[in-house]
Image 1 (tube, helix red, strand yellow):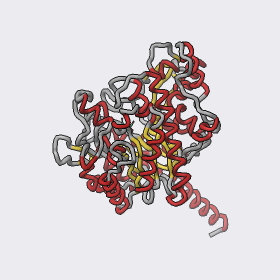
Image 2 (cartoon, protein in one colour; image 1 turned 180 degrees about the vertical axis):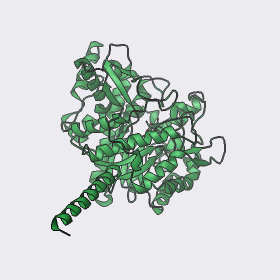
Image 3 (cartoon, helix red, strand yellow; image 1 turned 180 degrees about the horizontal axis):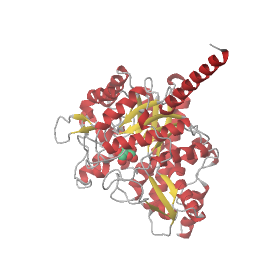
Image 4 (tube, protein in one colour; image 1 turned 90 degrees about the horizontal axis):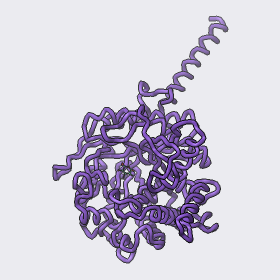
Length: 499
Ligand code: BGC
């Protein structure tokens, strides 16, 4: 064989190998990328008053206003994970996840919210769950607060009481002390923006207060301080020995300008700053503190309304520094997107303050009738925005998923995850975003807050009319199992075009 021929053959082999590698890379999630599913305590545990657990604001709301939810149901039993946690871990193992994100019920551990009464049965329950996970090779990712505040603390004002920052620090200390030897991924608070709504609008979420923007700003301010306190506590006393990572899970839609007009683009920025920026700017930006546009609008409106001080409390310079940088990774929950235009004063809450209006794009498909729109491209745009605006942080998607009415053959959910995971691959391979992991919401159908059991997000179906609460895998569980186990999206599902 001539030297030329050998060279030609060799370069062909190299070309084929390179093509193979790039295809493999395109549909592969990198080494160390973590896949998991999530739930939260009130949504799955049940056992609402068992073994010394205290009353939470959700228990209280459900029992004092039994028709609050769309189906008149509550979370007293939910998926009964308080008794069936071993079955949950079996499902997780069957799925092949790397981690499980669950939350701890504050009043199960501290019935009044304070540390003078620690409920050992509650500590035992979470120890059992954590150990069961670890024994099955599954890492726990623990959310400290997923909306179920002890009612006792709510009676003292809940998140509007400045002392909540101290109470939260004590609670966090209890968790680090009891579980920190085994828990290496912590989320302090889930979706602060949604907690704000429970204090601002009626008929939506516990504690069901109607304190408008006064509640909204105040609750947001204290959440930022409480989160920072828990982070610094870990730094000062636990990080060296326990070596975990901490963040706060923010939720945001992608806000897309309805037109290219300067007005709509500015309005879109205001929407983003009032929602994502309200928490991300103080914690994750270089400058810290509230976004300038939020501060300016809040101050102006407060003044125009005849108040002597702004509804949005101020951070001292020292507090700006204290809150800034309190994250080891950027944790984000993404579900859908919205179109934005500059609006007048017809809106409510921060939508009114920000002077914006939201729309759906009619071309975006719905996930189910009466449900939100499926906009996978928004996930990519949101995460690129986070990369560009918050110094390229490591990013963990701590929730992504869609509701339907509970069918087993959930082909739309398969399509939803296919599309969103495709965007994650583009973020990794084309946008240079440092992606740490992806969390499917949810492991199983569960109590969906105001909607009761009418909206289902699970990979597993739960039969809520059977006292044994049997779980059955949906088609999406089989689809995700393949991805979780191989860390690859099937090649035929990879699309490179923008969606
Ligand atoms: C929350 C979950 C909720 C899910 C679906 C997220 O905002 O963290 O508790 O079930 O959305 O609505």
